[in-house]
Amino acid sequence: ANIPCLHSDTIVLCDCVSVVLGQDGWSVKYTTQSICVLKGSTVELTCSYTYPSGYTVTTTFWFTKYNAVGPVSLSDDPDYKGRVTYRKDKENEHTLTITDLRESDSATYKFRFTDQTGKWRYTGEPGVTLSVTESGLQVKVTGGHQDKTLTCSTTCTLTDNPTYIWYKNGQHLDESTSPQYKDPVSSNYEDSYSCAVKGHEDLHSPAVCVQGQDCNRVSYTKRTICALKGSSVNISCTYFSLYNITSSLWFSPKQSDSWRDELIPEDLTTDPGYAGRVEFVGEKERGQSTVRITDLREEDSAEYKFIFNTQTSRWGHSFPGTTLTVTDLQVKVTPATEAGKRTLTCITTCTLTDNPTYIWYQNGHKVKEDSSSLDSDSFSDADSYSCAVKGHEDLLSPAECQKCWSVTYTHQSICALKGTTVDISCSYTYPSYHEIKKAFWFTKWSGRDPEDLSSVPGYEGHIEYLGDKESDCTLRITDLRLSDSAGYRFRLITSGEMVAGSPVSLTVSGNLSLISHLLV
Image (cartoon, rainbow, N blue to C red):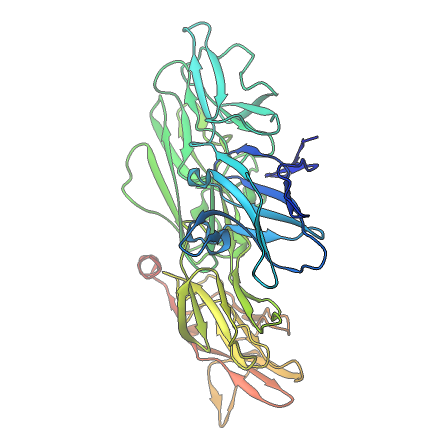
């Protein structure tokens, strides 16, 4: 039997059905023959395979396209860059995961495996047909003025008989397995309706007006954004009000504990945690608003919302906002194969928005501009490897190396506002057979030796070492002063060697407009 089951925001089909049986012991079984999922969601396609005894399978992959040589693995297809992972669940079972699904992902997916000699290659037919809804969920309004019907529609029938959730002005109304809203529709011209599928509440439909062309509503350009730590991000929305707007602001529900009244949102620009890092950009046109957050930190990961006030009410608080996830870059090294081949992967905690191009560095020198993975049989344990995203080359990942020394800074230069707090992030590596004797930051030398900032007059109670004595060497400076402008360096002393990174330039300014200009 084909039994659907739902896990979080990922659709998984359980209990395999035989889709194709091969001859002479070669076969592939898929969990389903077709599946329809929401644009922006994640899907898993699973299969099991068999082959005759005496053979050893060395290559397994999924594909949708062919080139002159043969099938192209999805992991090598630029259209799927950073969105595809393969997983071997059990012996002879294989799962394909595709994240951030797009309309162009609609295709037939097939699994292929080859034996160690390369002479035997087997493809499971006919594969799995994946349909991705063209525009996500849409609310369709039919009927007359007094008897309107609302339908939560998609361009294909969603797999697994989902539960639909209805919202009025952003507030939860009802849940049903029927895509139609069963209760009477409001006759109020102010009201808007939207829908979502349970388990995918972050993929709301756009809000629609049901009693005319205009109603009070807030819609976000992107519901989810994944951005690099240290970079800047723009979060945008469109809005409409039937009444004159007296004020508007952006806020994050995550910050409600710091509000004077936890029921009344406060502007991000007044939050100390965002001091000097939040600004409104673009033309201040009626109906459009964009907030920019600079020098992103991991703690900035949160939902962000826009609200507007009229003389009689506040709108936008209940509407789902944009969820921002901030990630750093890390280089992961897979163990060498029998042929000596290794794979380096530039990993993130979320799929970066806008399908970026990755840049690879060896010992600090650019070696390749390509995908998030780098394959080679010539990696040296004595070399260090790091990655970055094109357009953010200053936000390098920590260097990864097996037997090398390195100090890597997230930023080479930082501009911050007087009175605020700044983190100068860095990481380091050293051979495992060495023991750390001392690790510290400095700006000046005392004779032939650098002076540990923690012992320099004026820095007591003003700095904090946040490192973990393993790889993180972040320095925090609080209540910044103009005199803190300097070049900051980290120094590592072990039982055998000493290493120090090049300086990070910190500029402290008392001029907010200058800060905004430098950070854009």
